[in-house]
Each structure stands twice: as structure tokens, then as C-alpha cells.
Length: 399
Image (spheres, rainbow, N blue to C red):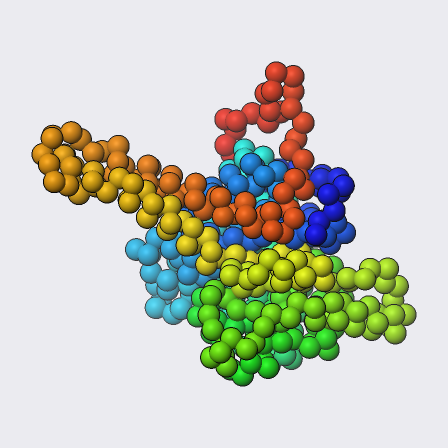
């Protein structure tokens, strides 16, 4: 798996720029590990991820989906504009709020963070437009974009439209140094309304498709990655054949890399890398560790995790309830007695939410371990006496 002798990456703590994100992925590719990306829906879940990264001395990726961002903003905010058109206003506001929270806190957790937006299908492009407007506004003030990277998922469209749309947006993003993730080929299951229930053979991207993307995007900037389908699913589902006959085949990712290198050589472009493009694995939840390791071996530098951490968060609440259920029926007294003792310390949200956070953080660490990312970041050196270089109380929103 990862190179145990690798020097930890030298990046500043806090939200990374697109260029720094590429530096992180270069380091991961060189040393054979990947960084897990966790879908977050609240400041609580973001803090879970940051805490686990700090305790593991690992770089990390925080990402928001359209619906997750809307939940972050509050479902009391309508996801449409005043003119009743689907502007996905709630999702834009929530994504911006999540990014600002992460920027405020990441430095004080002391870890480098890629702030990323997840799947954006064609019907969700108003969300993408809104986030880019926020990036541009932030860039004017601070010289960096609000987000490290964004994802476009037009895998349900024809390849030509998919690639052309990515090129159009990537040109705009490159001016701010933002990293782009795109998807080609169809990942099974469902993610934020993008659902695939087609034939099993559609769950595999071809080398020719990957090359078309690499050629088009590399002409703009090297700051991009490709989510290629190799039989993977979002969440935990049966395959389209109904019998789970479709299996993950991460070994084909190596063939994609070899094909890109071959084509670059034919075009007289020097290529010293055996894995010339950054690949992303979607549907990491429920995957076998051996499949994950094979994917990383073949150039996967980012793996998405959502379902497993949702389950872990819930398990924390459930276990807390099982342990304390007798004192959670009323404000005073037990379930079957009236001893008059207060139960506030049992039902206080800070207590049972913290139980959920501890459970989710533990699952984040499992993913970091599986991907070989633990210990791949060296925190800033500490002064004598154990006091950190950065003060704890400077909580200002700056790049």
C-alpha cells in the first residue's frame, strides 16, 4: 500500500488552493496512498472529519453535495429564488456556509483540507454557478478561491456534451486555480438525484473515454481528476443484474493509465509517469479493502465515503440511547419511577451529538487507515513547552 518511508507532505494547515490540492495528489500518487473525501451535512460532521484528520496526522477532504448543502443552510430556506425558478439558492448558501466554517476551523485543527463540492449533474448547474460566483467574490478579496475544488458530473449526458461542459467551466475555474473533478462512465446507485439503473456493461469506462477527457482538460490546466466507472456503486446496492454479478474491477484503471501514457508518447509528449492522470473512486462505502488497495495501486488518489459515515453517526446516537434510555423518557425521573432527578445532562443535544461525532470520527480513521493516509501529514513544529506556533484564539476567516 502506502510507502511507510515517505516523508509527510509539507503543506500549510487550512483549506488548500487548487494548486496545493494537485501537490497533495502528486504526493499521494508517488507514495501509493489516497485521501478519503467525506460528505458533510453540518458543522458537527465537518468537525468529526477535522478531528479524525488531526488525530491521525492526515490530510483530508471535506465535501458537500447539493442536498447536503441545502440541509446545512437549513431546510427552512427554500431552494429556489424569488422568481420561483430553480436557482438552488439554499444549496448555494449552505455550500458557502460549509466552506467558510471549514476555513475558520481547519487551521486550528492543524490539518490541510481540500474543500470540495460533490456531484453536480446538468440539472444542478445553477448550484455550480452560484458556488463559482462565491469563489470569484472571495478571490477578489483574498487572492484565492473559497473552495479548493468542484466536481461536475455529467455522466448521464453524451460524452461530447459532458467534456465540452467541463472544458467551458474549467476555463473559468483555472483563472482562480480551482481543481476540477469530473465523471465519465456511470457509477451505479444514486447520489443526489443522479440515478443509474441501466445495463451492467454501462458501469465501466473505456480507456478511449478517459483519454478524451485527459487530452481536453490538460490543455487548460493540470489541476483535474477523473472519476472513472469500474463497476462501482454509490451506497450499498445490488447490481443492475439483480444478482450482484457485476464486480468491481479496479485493475482496468491500470489499463486506462497505460493507454494515456501510450497516447501521450504517440503525440510526442514526454511522459515519465506510469500513472499520468489522477483518478477518483466513487462508491467507496461497502467496498472490500482489497478492491480499494487495487484501485489506489492504479492511480486512485481520492475515494468518496458517505453511506458508511452516515451509518456510523447514527450508531453513535443509537448506542447512546440504548445505554441511557431509562433517563430519556421525561425531564425528571426514570422511565418507570418518579425519583425527581433531572435528566438534562442525558438529553442535552451536546451529549448525544458528541456520541455521534465520536462514532463517525472513528469511522473516518478507518478509511484513512485503509487508504494509507495516516501519518502522511506533519503538523507544524511546536515551540518549546508544547505550545503550538499558531494561536488558538485568532478565529478570522482568511485564506
